[in-house]
Length: 455
Length: 123
Image (cartoon, rainbow over all chains, first blue to last red; front, side):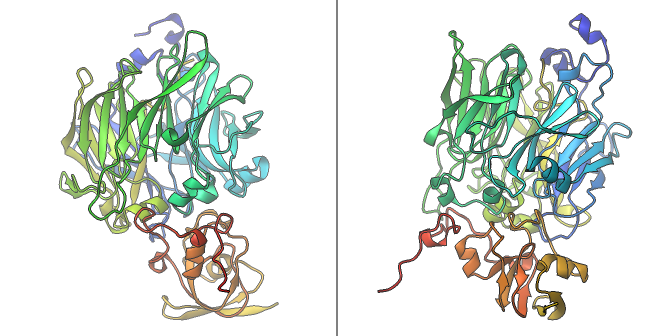
């Protein structure tokens, strides 16, 4: 039921976030699973999971698409098209772009011809990307009208700050998207809000720093990010930088409100375990503040309290709830952000983590902690995976090598708030046919709460 | 062409002749050794192996900190042999490669070369 004339056409996605919330329930999930760094000499792969509760295969992996080679480290992924091209009847949400962080290979996967059995459409070789653009280590994929941009965290030698790779709709390399990186030191995630002519980008570290593993001492040596960048989106260059300091150590996932008119956005500072909120004030100036501060927790065997390490955040499609994961503590939290200046904790569940609160869930030993999450468009089901990054997993949760990762589902009250782990849904990646693998980002065929941007 | 003998201690002592000028990852994979790897430029640690005898030139690696180097780790995708070597390969050689950075922090001289503080020479 279209809300305006333009949406009568048949482009991908939805006319508005409100329309997206009325979409049919997700029945398939795509998630990546990795063998890189596990000792199993097999390619990383894309799994398709049956999420239809009426299906006999509910909560099971129904197909696996192996990448051509080993060592990619699949991580995040994105669609070729989203609601930003809803008005373009020539576009279709058909291909997942699945990058390898370590190899720089981009795998273009056709998920529409047979949604239950995705197939490899094309590979853009990492060597070609490096040669043409001097970029490596692909991370976030956003479609941009009919084009695609990908944050690349390093140059071809793995040094920061990298830049942005621009692909056209036929998956040909156009070149670098940005006109300038300004004084930006590091790259990671980004999100754009075109009505405000703004893009916001965050900072992890140089690939040569984060890929081998995490050293706390390197944070003190300024090898990890602590700044947030506001871009002039049309000019494709950074315009303003906020130094977040100790409140914003390692700012990772960037989420604007889904409402395209809103200027409010949020980023999770992983090591500080804070949520930073930004908005444009009445004078048109960008402002920021800390709205959530997760306290470090004591641990019997640790000399210092354990930081939460907020590895991800996301917003419900109606912009009412913010979800975050504390990967080291082991909890997922739900905050009501109806007033974005005052986040109210409304739900919390535990799975895995280092504090020992929920070592086993639904009969599966949870190794790792809640890490990537994806929320259904209607805001009622949150799918959770437990692996962060192969080398970091190996440091904090070495047993993941033999136990693998797992996927769980959390039922969320989208009116009053509240969360409960669903007792009937669990995918144990420790029992994969080629041995224990680790699952990371999840997406749905029809778009989800981190895939779509409205113009 | 200069060649050396590489012995794989944790693969039943299998040995291979390899060229001095090529990265060990390439030479060993070409001879059928199944090895993990990732970035293939010395930046990501996935292909790390433990050198228990011999020596390599791995100036191009940027992944290892000084503690890992002192523990014998080498980055096979860029390491070239400078003599006969014995290696332990694969993740079964990674017992000392990964450590919890909160429980077992690095000392200043154990950081990566570009930020490490050298140990003072005894006077």
